[in-house]
Length: 275
Image (cartoon, rainbow, N blue to C red; front, side, top):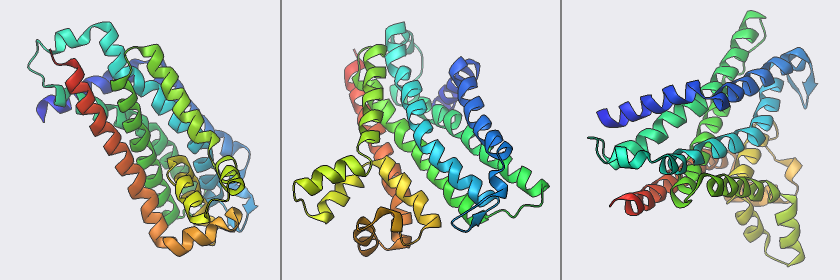
């Protein structure tokens, strides 16, 4: 455990000095600042006003930005160290491969989640200062959604990084994964399924295998419990899970997917890089 935490600390220190982290922090802090600047806390949409409206908008923007940031920066981790010749030094030090790999994940998770969470926390602090009501239930669930989103794509990124043999290939693969998940949100996938006369349960099941779709639907469920926006798909989701069950699924599935991806990546990494 000591080796793991030392590796995590080293990764955190390196990330804090990196330019990508400064841009990453500026993006999410800037989003919240701009939302306040444009007065979203004063507007009303579907009955939501104040900080609730800001959080709804923030989670939708984060869903598009966070995955690609996490993937692109994470895939450089193992692939970049391989190209830089770090492993030769690693094997000569009293640091196990498992401690190094999982330490990298812990350190990177802290780095990618902290700016997102601190931006939300800043919004809550500002709302409290301005005597705007804070929807603590929504804030807690959105925080949990962002936590599992970061975990999911961090695990996928580490898997890609362990498989790819160069940084360029790793970054290209990460971009393709993100683009594929983005393209298969709702309309494209479901349209193809409907044309092929696939059963609605199968089409919705395949759509919910996409973690981005899971995040999006869970975010919608907070201000649209009947999921009217999704049309007939809502009946399949609510009949299968129920509203509470789906909210639990939206947290458990991405977390499990991320952990599974990271575990597979670790075994590939251990098998491929031991002499």
